[in-house]
Image (tube, rainbow, N blue to C red; front, side, top):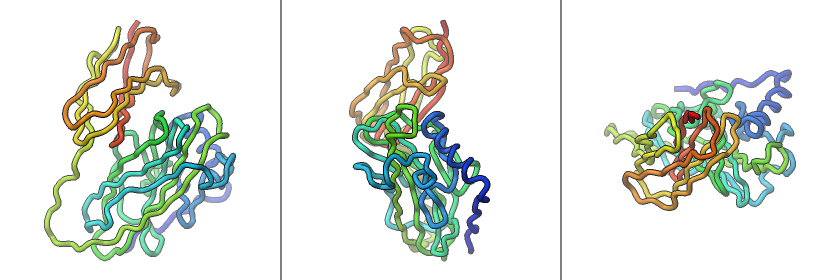
Length: 280
């Protein structure tokens, strides 16, 4: 079964797309535009000049893809994109999958805080770029193609940003990972294990404070961040290292003006986000 051919953007849109990536990752913390993974035929935001303070992959940080060595044809596979750089506080990513002919391969199932770049289902990016010190992890689910597709190469780009509201001071990194086709045994695989679930946010609407309940399925570091409607960080609650099980973090809303806010439960195994309404 052949994969879908790559569709390339027409030249008149190049300048607009570069501008959109700057707006997305820096001024407005939504996802990057499509075709910025560094894959063959793609560019990066560094090449288009949006984040070109430093040469591509020249910084002290990195982006890496963590995935199994092989995939089961026709089955979902979990993988994680990790963007890291000491001293940076905001991170974004984009990923795509290609077969040996450089055609798109498989499909993606969106998770929390993820979206298709420019509504293109071949590229997954962040929805809200998280504020987190030094490193951010983005866990995704890729649905493998049927048997016979062969090796798959995942291409990812990461932005390690300083969070100061401009495109200077940001580093762009790229990476690639080859995953081989496994043997289709015909045995039904178990559902992918969960890593993190938000179980409750109460009360919401919020007057004086609220409690975010969550369950971890692996040991992880935990932090709760709250942003206003403009994407500015207004509260941080450090949860430290938590073992598997049910936990909660309390948010004190004293001093917060009435309005809509967004919480981000940021852990080393994934991120969950949602909306808060503060009433005054």
